[in-house]
Length: 84
Image (spheres, rainbow, N blue to C red):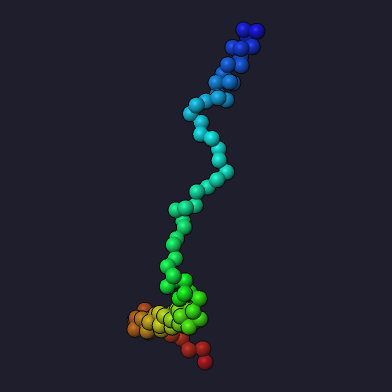
């Protein structure tokens, strides 16, 4: 009986450790929650504003592309080759 207790004591000591934290399946996502203002919600539902936003993104992208083309045209090391 005493030998079994001596053998089982380390197992019980590790199994009932007070330093272990209980495992939880819940992950707190409150840090990622954002509060949307009423004006922002109305603006996101307004079709004119969303259309303007999309159009501005396209214009900005085209402007960056044209700026890049102008930059490469001005450099000495790069030349545009005509495929004609």
